[in-house]
Image (cartoon, rainbow, N blue to C red; front, side, top):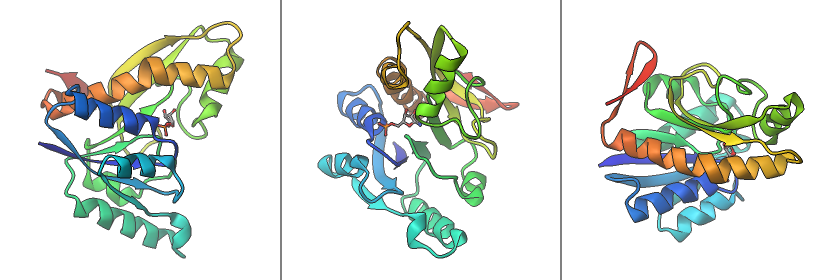
Length: 207
Ligand code: GRF
């Protein structure tokens, strides 16, 4: 059984996709041990509670020192003994010690085709605004392992999505979630749970 902890900051539609995929068997052999948010009012926490999943808020704002927040987050995650940590719209810089402790055991969903429109400053609607400003005809989403860089870890899964004339950043964001994110994140978790994903020389190999 792959034990996962999901970190969130917002509405949690990707979390919902994971919950639904575990329920309908699209993700096999996996249990969601906990959902942790940095925002007390994140709707993702309500989604977790509605599904009987442990839900808690650990906010940097509740700690005087950043290092105290980092320690608290790390201790909370460690307490669940997860096999995999899933960042599902988590907008907080991870404690370096977390990345060190869980090499190739943290995955993130990013709403573009990495290496385009990723790295520092590319999050949320900013990604889609930049895609539209460049006049791209195709965008998409990427699931990747997290390393010490910004969106630089090994790529596990990607899916392309068409950019349509007249798209606004909001319309494009929605299409990328519906057509890509909500599919490839559960798929990647299932592939990991099935033991199909390995990292060799910094690249993902699927068996
Ligand atoms: C998604 O677009 C994800 O790619 C990005 O943040 C958004 C999260 O949405 N990192 P939700 O909270 O899962 O609804």
